[in-house]
Amino acid sequence: MIEVKNIRKGFGDVEVLKGFSTTFKPGQTNLIIGQSGSGKTVFLKTMLGLHKPDSGQIIYNGNAYSDLNEEQQRDLREQIGMVFQGSALFDSMTVEENIAFPLKMFTKMKKKERIARANEVIQRVNLENANHKLPSEISGGMQKRVAIARAIVNNPKYLFCDEPNSGLDPNTATVIDNLIREITIEYDITTIINTHDMNSVMEIGDHIVYLQKGHLAWEGTRHEIFKTDNKDVTNFVYSSNLFKMVREAQNAK
Ligand SMILES: Nc1ncnc2c1ncn2[C@@H]1O[C@H](COP(=O)(O)OP(=O)(O)OP(=O)(O)O)[C@@H](O)[C@H]1O
Image 1: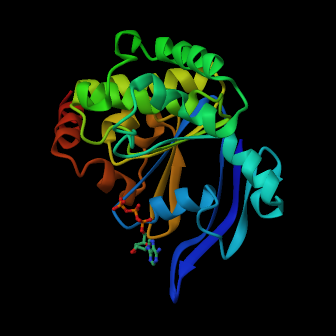
Image 2: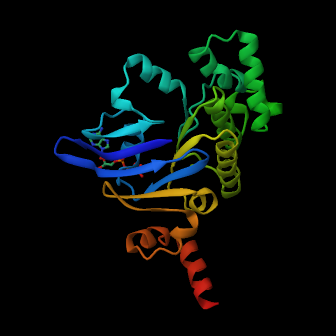
Image 3: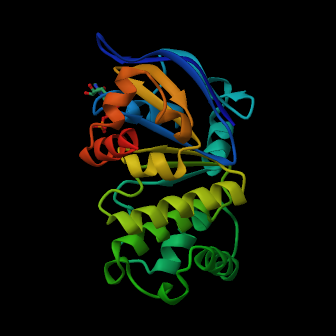
């Protein structure tokens, strides 16, 4: 669980995160949505300890990040998996080597053990036939699976995903979304996803946080978001023509 308590973060005179609180629970996919510039990335980076908040706290399973010493921060970092926007795989390493890499970094496992563990995860994300291929030899969707496998290989308690399905076709994006949700539930991970994708909201939004100009303007589930009368949220949700058409079709019934 990650508790956010009255978090504030600014740069110079500009306050980007304007003091809000929320809780991200394990075993559910938590989505952060909002207009471009609303502060999603700054929020993600502040939770990860990459930005120091001006005030407020980020509490990981009862432990405030600001109270952790360097060693404890390093321990916490080992419990965090990251899926980056462009997958961020190492081009010269095979799928298997990419996935085993965090084990080399963070554990004392021997090479044989690392490869064995990597292959367990490879099976979990259905990449069995790709373990000796290079990232350039597999599709974008498969690269995302590799990124997810690498993020979970060290059994993280927390998983952060930055736009995990950018650049994927809608079908593959849905498959990736559902894979992240299945893994979240299966391993009881606290998963936080930064996304622009309304399909993701519909498919896997167990808990959605809507940021607006640095405020937490709304939070709720994927079922609630389509019923809310919060004008800003509805404007955001229905900014896509597809969703507008869905709403008109529903109203016409
Ligand atoms: N290191 C920084 N220094 C100064 N200003 C910053 C810094 N990082 C972000 N900002 C500002 O904070 C605001 C929020 O940026 P952020 O990247 O969090 O938005 P976002 O919601 O993630 O947008 P997008 O959806 O386009 O990625 C922007 O006005 C941005 O210019």
